[in-house]
Image 1 (cartoon, rainbow, N blue to C red):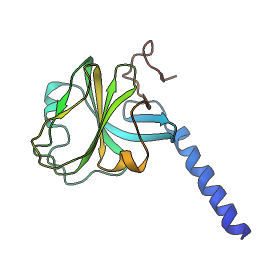
Image 2 (cartoon, helix red, strand yellow):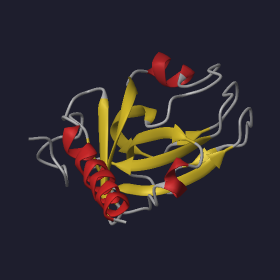
Image 3 (cartoon, rainbow, N blue to C red):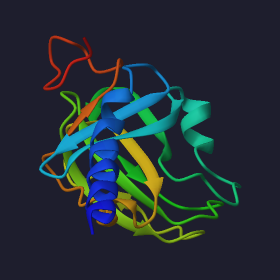
Image 4 (tube, rainbow, N blue to C red):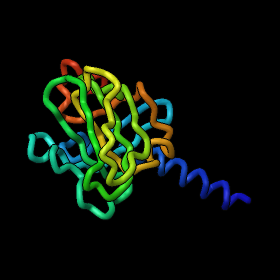
Amino acid sequence: MMRVSGLVALLVGGLAALPALAQCSLDKVALRGPFGQVAFSVEIADDDSERAVGLMHRPSMPRFSGMLFDFHSPGPRSFWMENTLIPLDMLFIDETGVVRHIHHRARPLDRTPIHSGSDDIRYVLEINGGMAETLRLQPGIEMQHPSVPADRAVWACE
């Protein structure tokens, strides 16, 4: 019994330490909320041509990976899944890094518009479909990334 509880403590302690390993860098997005913290390796789509292609034509994406769309200023955002082969969760994030809306499990190849739900969205983080639910992500959680201006960020890079 001691071995099992020791192993559980090691695993829980090790998992709790994982977010601390994530450094604030362009290829990482950290999220925090009541669930704790989690980090994703991301590609950045921050110009019109990169945003137009996004994650299209990819047959899969590794767990804890995603794409961060940066529109450089707040506004209403709308996405669709044309030519996107994998289901995605979309986190719509304001310019302070606060998640305002989550669209769960967007259907591959669907042309139905997916709206941001508000007019003040600067970022959209796309992750594998179902991850938001698995990790208990919800509106109000906070994102840390170097593109969020330090003077506006609720969780600024140090």
